[in-house]
Length: 171
Image (tube, rainbow, N blue to C red):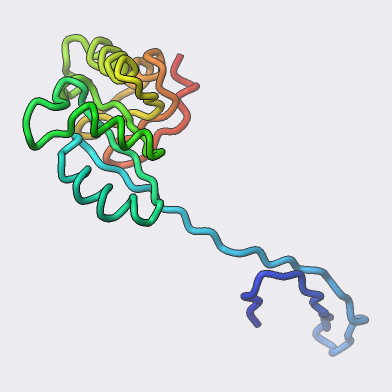
């Protein structure tokens, strides 16, 4: 049988042995809770279409939230990349603005990954944003890079393969 509607049910049951002897009927309360599905929407690189299409046409009309991971060194450099004002509008709407290095470098091979991560976060903060999440460019990371991300002040990070939400072990 299936219990699909959220409620508390009294389920009656008994068992029998191989000889056919049955025990007395027993009762057990079972609580069925509603299933909650959560979806995480993320956008990388701060392209203007993420603002004009994803936010203004899809997210904003439905009150949906997403995370936008941007490279601070490329913000506003062309008509194809969001401006600081557009990022501020996203943040004012409750969208999450996260860091992704100054210029999308591979942090496992960059000669100064600390500057890439910390300077990126500092630039976002200087523009009134509150970046708490970080996206590894191209998903490239290792224990050293994860420690840098933690040291620079991020509370969570993600790669192309997974979300690394516990940076506390990288001190």
